[in-house]
Length: 313
Ligand code: FUB
Image (cartoon, rainbow, N blue to C red; front, side, top):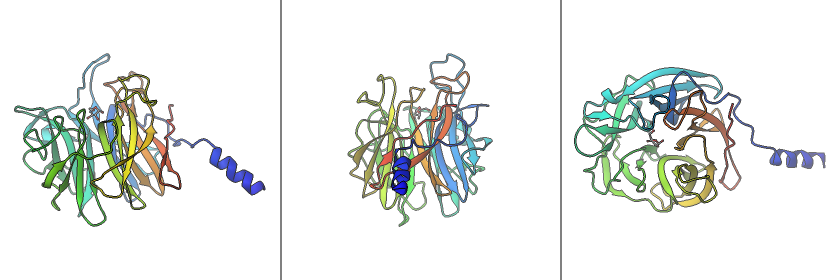
């Protein structure tokens, strides 16, 4: 009986937060974190918010790297890619993600071009998770001229499956998009598709796999119980048995945060799952002066995700 009570108490106990204080660094404002685990180190790739106090627009020119081996103590490696990494780009270092393949690290970025049109997906490459990163393609991987591309080509997430096939998902405001990537990681293969089932998709997809099931978390701009106003977004998630979908919506994985945007990524470090995300909690923070936070993430036996408890210290 004592054992049963202990099990019951454990199952009812609140999810313990990560031991670190959030935000993880406060020396610069950071946003749109994307984790990549290499050995026992978690690297987090994030844009830098440079908007002035009270600013009402994004000012983003650099992508920074943070790292940790315990999700509690963090090293800030500074800017490891900038708009200048892409000679064809001109502004807006928005959300990004790094994926590893065959000894190389591919940094997929949302960035504004110099010519007509707006956002593009660029890709830089390096032999180390910390760079140096150089433009891998000499032009956008996805742009306004890509057939069936989203009108807003932002927020790439790249996933390499166990069979070596790579997938790119992206999109903002007007729906998600998906396409297969070639083995070189810098060319697309086949048509751009519109994945089905990502209910209330707004932006910020992040794809991962656990126990043979594909997961997509994404920012959902809706007021169906997860945010207090349509200015905010929560993170919903969906699962699929095929990496191109269709997806089945499974619920909310991260509620409203203190910034209007909500952008997260998931990784497993030393056996523990973590969600990295951003909020406006750093001193002087705001919707355009955001900061990366981390918390532990747990799964139920049926593969569903226990909603993340935000540590706000
Ligand atoms: O950081 C700029 C944009 O805000 C990102 O691309 C979106 O995901 C949102 O977080």
